[in-house]
Length: 195
Image (cartoon, rainbow, N blue to C red; front, side):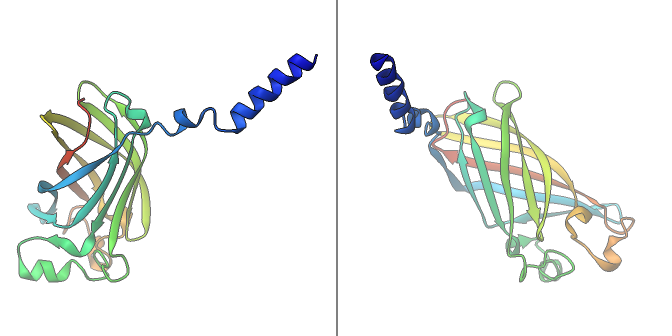
């Protein structure tokens, strides 16, 4: 009986003392976003005509082992004030409260809740997208291509701007400005493993 009690105490001490800590802490190392060559583009339609813009300032925190994607994590933030259409009139309009409300909401963000493989070099990243303080669940398809030490993550997805109160008042009329906004991205990283 004393031997059994000692074994149980040893087991309890091992568990409480962090015997499983190496497993819990075995997270992928963060990758480094390479600003050069990375882009986030958004496309909407005004009176049926495509209008393209882009964000020029964003940050990403990505920890992903492509061979074990379920252990990964993605966090992304975009400076909403960096939206550019290449038109002085539009660039001055977008920061206003009716659109992105940059003063009150200087950042949009995405944080993953689950990552799963979807084929060779392909992943589905589920998470919460927050724009103007409104959070919605989305799933983003991602293609990962490796070239030496560099990785490129690319993909596209569609959101509904009215879900995030982008374009209020008269601009809720989707016959003037489409509700659907396509987001395309190409992001360069170093420090990601080969898919």
